Length: 99
Image (cartoon, rainbow, N blue to C red; front, side, top):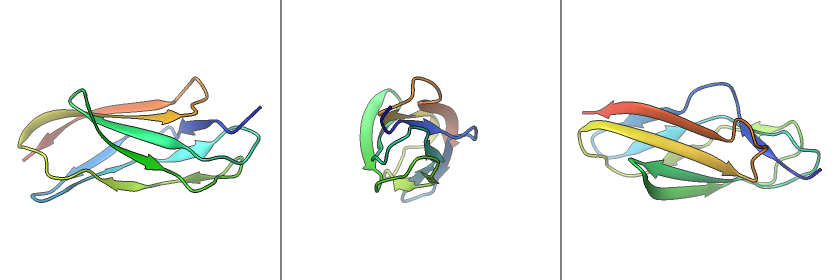
């Protein structure tokens, strides 16, 4: 097996402020080799950012905070997905309101 990644059972956290928005999640290497995860971030169906982890050993994880810029007021949907994913728990989605 290789390095494979999954999001932990928690939720995707989105913290909009007036000037920036932070997206955070918890991610683990569930494979049996050291590897890097690449996470894509989408907002309202459009790709906006990516994040690449440092090398993670099997059983270890990270909780990154990704800044994605200012978001207009209103209801939005955020989605993150990880590669290489394990085939389960490899994406998180949430709906949030920016003021």
